[in-house]
Length: 311
Image (cartoon, rainbow, N blue to C red; front, side, top):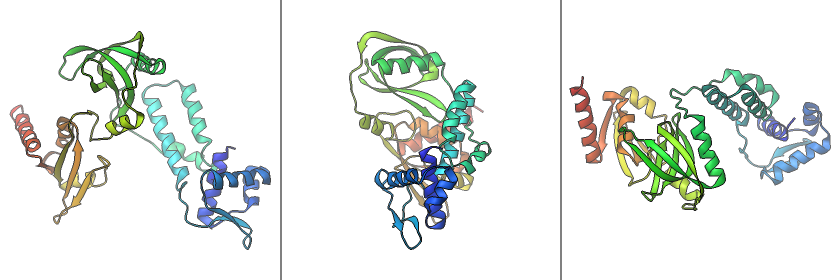
């Protein structure tokens, strides 16, 4: 039994009954009292749990509310479901899937393990790149080498770039490479499925252009995957079934949602690429009304008009 499983057990019993006795833990895991005390010390010293011994009840309890592990078993079950779904979608060898699944299962308390197969994670789109491309990126990152990239953009134009691979990002089931474009001297996002070829430039080593925190900030600055450029705050109104769906979603951590008097909602969020938010909103048809800024409203209306003319 892993220490994590024992700590999850200790925490859950305290949450459910108010405290836990050492005998409960030794009997459940067939370990010594000394090991139990080490686990409790780990909870207190390493995880900052306010765990104390209460002599009147002869058990360990929390002296104040503590929620670090709240619903940990349930969250680990969800994590396992996500892993198995993604692994099956891309045809990962069963020996690798089973090994990783077993490692996740060992982190879940025994009585929860049988529930793993009853939690299913599905994604509507799985756009896996050739593993040769993916592996080349990983190898270049490991060896700190620049790459020569042959790429076809969304308009069908073929280009060749010299890049520094910085981050591999999975967004809505598609894989993207965030890289420093040596020619543009700027960060660019490349859809890996459109990469025709990729080769390391031996001896040409990368330079640290950005810190990890700066890259994280760049990735999370606006809605969508097409990053960079000036952020635009977009506002739209959602009604009907679109309102019901969007009201429970988080499109961006900085979004602002207001419930209107007619029960519709108004959403404001930062966007780096207007075409991307446009395509997302068109999915909801007449139940979305673009409100601001004016040039976004114009693009939205022109797109709908063009769609109608092409029917």
